Length: 437
Image 1 (tube, rainbow, N blue to C red):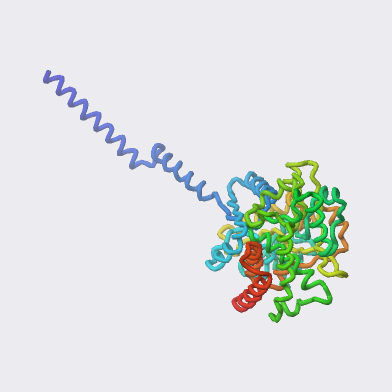
Image 2 (image 1 turned 45 degrees about the horizontal axis):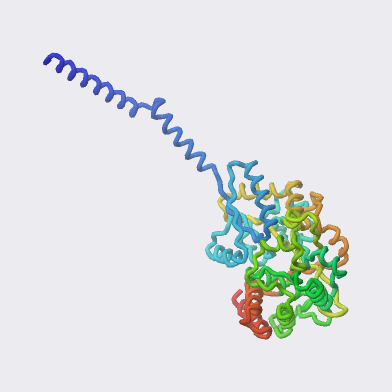
């Protein structure tokens, strides 16, 4: 028994000694066992470090436009698996969020300059003038995106030609021609209301987003205050002496439309995604700006939309397109990933992607290196002699006024403001922001 115990004890000591030596050898050796484990971890770490995530902010709000941009981003990520793009669409909060980021000098790697490539974002964007796509920049956009020194401030995803989008099926049904003057526009709205027994909304807004009402004031301000030779207030607006009582016509007319049942009853709660559904059902007739047709056609292949320039406010006035840059992509000058950010823009500038974005957003391309079959092309040709005017706020208003235009519109239609109070508020904010900018 004692002999068995001694043998067991001796066996245990030897086994423990062997394990200890093996363990010690492994820890002191740079051999395979421990080395391969560390190597795997290092490999994972290196792979993690090589993966880049670019932040992207866009002003896109329309669902069809979002889908177009998301699809393009997905294609880029598939071709470049080491680069992820984290896209954000803040809608009406875009400007306020970007102001905070500008103040902190912590901008997204890629962002939409939405008409302010030089004036607002100029000091934050990288110069893209050495990129190949610049040679294809549409001549109508060169003044917008470049300066005298040759700096190129952003890449144009598309370009705007805004007026009104209308339901062609509805207008044809009631024998209505696209209106050329504001009076004709009001008559068309009244006709649609009466002939449809209130089943069709004559003029629809997704007013839960104040930008929808800002679009109304901004686009109609040009024929009211700029392009009519007898009522051209451009100098006064630029030097700060403008009398804002001359603006009251617009809130008066918008309120008149509401009181006469020409606007959607749920205007202040309506969401932008509802627009495609209502167009597809022939439940609305007119909306502001240009509506991409893709989302509407998916719901109703028989749907037909048209676009028209802004009607003249006064008899004898001329119609105008409102345009310039629509959606863009700029690179933050201090991004940690300049090469990857520029690589994404190079991808966007490929002819097949230029075509895809233009067709997906139903707007003319920003580059001339691709032929895009834009749904509204025939309408742009029909009105080819109509002049394109820049967005009113981008030329004549200080930064921050877009929110004021939209916000006062919401207050007007909620009964919190009169048309005169809207104009007064506009004047006060115009003066304050001019001084603070």
